[in-house]
Length: 134
Image (cartoon, rainbow, N blue to C red; front, side, top):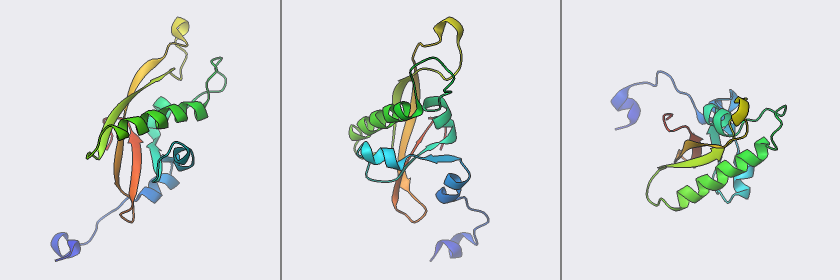
């Protein structure tokens, strides 16, 4: 018995490709390959905003490339310690991307989650997100 026979026709679907096209996911596969990931990797828009995005007008010596590398490095390390699970959480210290007065350059921890699961064609893909996202 097929899924269509069991559940009926698909009412709506939202593919990973659509999420990448409309910006809900940010493709970071190219840098992820440098960080030794072997499958496509994307961050949710909210995870990107919290952990990677950087306003170049800020005086701190930060950039999105370096911040993304930190996220990918720590994600890879967390994944390597967690065999047999499709989801793992990890922490990254990052300087917030907003002016906080006297604490303008104090790093703060942020928790992220790495999930490996099937892509649009059942291939393995990784999504890095905030812990409350799915």
